[in-house]
Length: 159
Image (cartoon, rainbow, N blue to C red; front, side, top):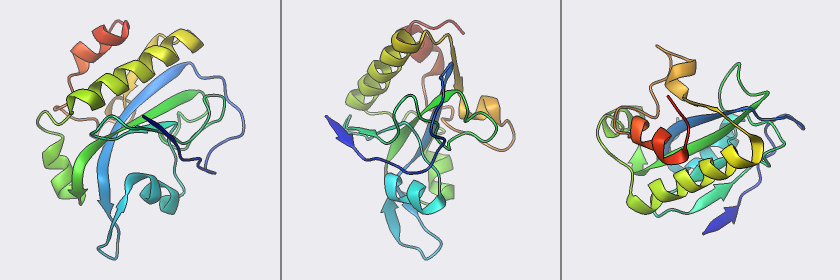
């Protein structure tokens, strides 16, 4: 299932040439201690992603491919961002622990792969990276629990 959840945060135009894979909690703790859905958390932070994929495989589309999104500092002008949502409610500590081990649900993985295959074909993308590849030491997602080598093979992109 696809849900349209437009975000106002991002540049008006881009020509994507890269996909950045992220992870974040499905529900994220705010400074006040309340938990909000990832789409609302990003909005509150003035951030965005092109797509978020829930544990049940629901795809939230937040920005059009031709629009920029604020998802990877320094790489937002020509990249597509996809957030893999880690099931449950997370503060930073529980999120870090969760992505250290396998966390993707089967329908979720299939939806992430399908979206990335579509982007690869539509935009001729050959570069797919982890958020942690772009910001080593600052970002750790999508984490060791994400089957990176298998994922690249499944979407038809070489490492």
